[in-house]
Length: 242
View 1: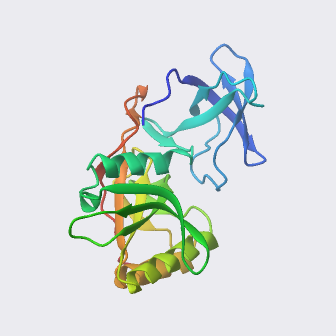
View 2 (view 1 turned 90 degrees about the horizontal axis):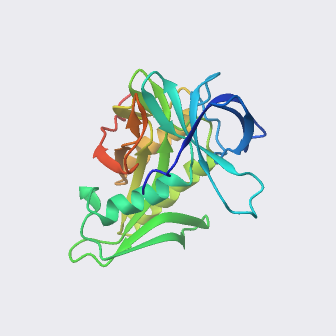
View 3 (view 1 turned 45 degrees about the vertical axis):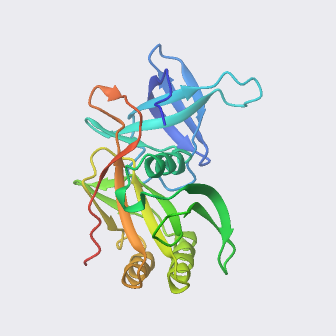
């Protein structure tokens, strides 16, 4: 997944109504951008933060700009566009970057499954020696001193996904929780017990039941700004011990 080109730099004025953000551009003008993130975005909306927008020439769009990246601390970038992680994960699986999931002949997205009527982000099939794999992708952007935490708000939906994954394991197939780490300052990932202890407990139960928990960090750029392919490139340790 290539970095949108060009990206337009600005400064965050405020995010509001979840889907809207007012941005001050370099020439001093102000625009309202679409904020493609329904979550709390904890830690990802510092006052006057450097942000980067993509621009659309689609005349049917109500908002011309989309908020893509934010500098959460000097030199640390986070991708807040939650439409990106599934694409990143699929490309990383298909290209063999996620070694744990290599060798599958077919990758499908948004497949219906489970007793709780979910949609799995990626379903992998046609492996010569392994069972089908059901892969749930979660975006990680909350960072504290190098540790990435998920979730950044209480998530009953995330708990449902863990239950569905455990059911797949009981049925004899592989189930994988893949954290797409979209923050360049994150070096390890932990469950956010201080935010959603129920999710943390259920995640540990899922791992003990055989759900595989992986994390891969995206390359987003550096202190000079965004660059590169925005692909998931390197594994990050997941620490479940309390």
